[in-house]
Amino acid sequence: MKVICVIPAWNEAKTISQVVADVRSQVDEVVVVDDGSSDGTVDLAVAAGATVLLHPINRGQGAALRTGTQYALDNGADIIIHFDADGQFVASEITEMTAPIISGLAEAVFGSRFLGKEHNLPPFKKRVLLPLARLFNWFFLGVRFNDPQNGFRALSADAAQRINWQQDRMAHCSEILWLTRLTGIKYQEVGVTVHYSHFGQQMSGGWRIISDLFLGRFLK
Image (tube, rainbow, N blue to C red; front, side, top):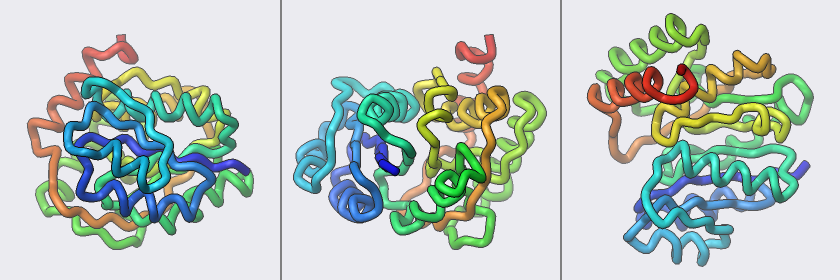
């Protein structure tokens, strides 16, 4: 099976070289979608051996993932990995993410920080933001996922074609889960290790996601 990993990146010069190097040993091709970086991310990703696609302006992580996923589909990927550029995920766990798809047990696999693997999630995010996100996804979208905001996922080519998300920024995570349920895609959650070097998405970011979901196209 041909596995292509899509990595959205915006000003990730500090980490992109190592992330690409780690991921290359696990997949057939690494695709970095540079989302308007101004810090040398592009040159470093190319030097590390990635295929680089360019957004001339910053459009958001959801848009970058959509660009990379379409490239992967156009270039014969059987499985598409979504992976972050900041070094928080462990590349060797890609094999655990793809295993349910290869064995036919799932068409989509979503990483979870809460299924027995190590993470250093700050208490406010763990005890306030993520429970609120779970409640929102369950009440308004009808989806129950252990970790509603995790960027580590694996999709079969068929699932990637059916999950046509429209959210350009961080609300794409919830939209992808919603579309997975809506289209009847068979899925699993798999525990993944997460090591944060910096922390984002405070309460204001959570409200932005909610507003995007309500005002965005997929709930109209």
